[in-house]
Image 1 (spheres, rainbow, N blue to C red):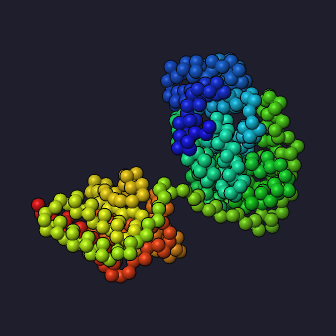
Image 2 (image 1 turned 45 degrees about the vertical axis):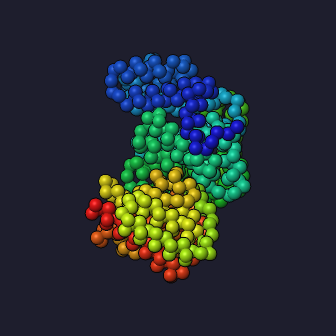
Image 3 (image 1 turned 90 degrees about the vertical axis):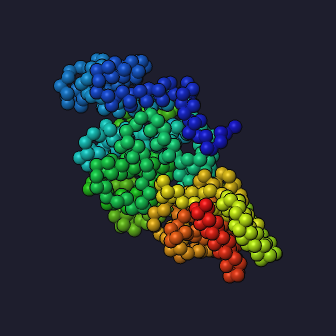
Length: 520
């Protein structure tokens, strides 16, 4: 049975700790990442004992640091212990090498689904492309770029391995509904693959720079990176997108995708297309060597011939095809609101209910009833007489200059009140405008082009109501709160001017009650 989507992070963390399929991955990655940042002699021993109690990984790491590139660079001769490797090569490089080995050695020999095998190969290919592109572009620390690239899709990789049922649901939803992977994974798991990867990586104490490179680039044409971290981020995303195209099963489709891809990154790298194709060739050779040491079941997932054929499509691409390629605009992800709105009809005797309510509240004020009693009564009259789905009173919080929900009636109101909160920023959203302009409004349709930009993100994430009313609550020219009321469908709030005036009278009674409570 699938876990609840809101528990996806906890499920992954628990399975990382409990599953024998990840022998010490979570523990060791956290340890290596934390200890490698401490320049202390004791850290060398910690890393030696923690990584690298796995003889297979120890041997592979020593083989790596004894390559010509490392040995000649440091003039250290043969490196035959992990302690000496850390001392000679440095904490950061050892951390990066160890992290890649820990990830792949933990996954590669498992008798897992085809999807996971594709993820492993795709991650390695991305890392190799990123490293070669960094070298071609004159960017230093190419091993660091390699690590950033292979962990870029950590969230998808972990879900594929540890939550295969949910991963398959995401894949099916993408195919059936033609939606983005981000949207599908958020729907199934409660968080997107990217968000999951960043949360887990942060839990593993990965650097802030690495976390930054794990974020997707949403612009349809990627802007030229200006700073070092932007260059690394762009390069990592470039490598991951390129590896996906190289692994496509259909070479014809690869040509079309390469045209879009080259158009998307046209402003980013001053590297000729022939050089990029050469990078791909080198990466294929690197991947082939890597796969030669894998279980044949994994190595058989993708053929070198298929990768090479797809790269030929990049070489043969016509420049006109790149210029004419139209990169589809990435639509904003549709986030399902937290709370739905149920329709309620306006009573036929709405006028009578409103007038009686106004009379009752006038008496409450003259009788000296408490402010809370009067507030509750006003909200009840509005709710009962108008058929709103919800009515909420928000009050100004002077400690952080925000408006927060205090009392309300309607659908899910107890859960909503703590989340009903917005900053008094003086900005252009409708809530701030109502308070700054001392005006009252009815928004008939939140998706109307004339008002869409005025509806804040926090509102769309909280409610699915398409129409709402706002009444400002102002005392002595100072905004102290707001009255909010909504209905589900655009156009549902149809209030004759006489009734709207009565609602404002109710609001004015609330102002009288506030002033009276301040004088008492």
